[in-house]
Amino acid sequence: MACCGYGGPPLNYDAQISCGETQVLNGSSVTAKGCNDTTEYISWDGIHYTDAANQYVASLILTGKYSDPPPFPGKMPSSNSHHSNFIS
Image (cartoon, rainbow, N blue to C red; front, side):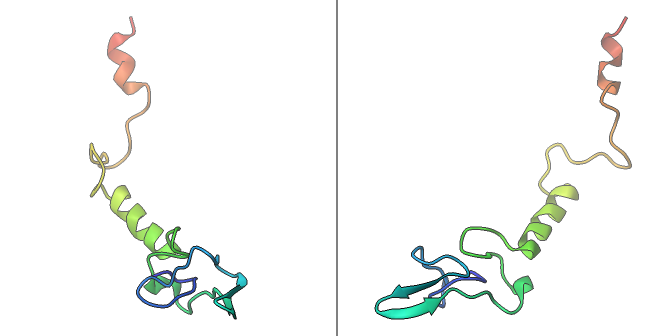
């Protein structure tokens, strides 16, 4: 469900009204408002991730869960280290 949107569950998203906008829909003036706690939502506006979702995905990538090959332990090798065998 979108944190900032209009329509309520299950999506709280209506393509006719963007986050923060007020429009007349079905004869009524409505405003797509933000939620109180963004950490409880994955989607900010039905299209973009919230900061909490971005942080979760980034942590999985940076810890190697979704990296191929996995990150190097310690520090990354220098950019020239893999070319040293070819330099005469």
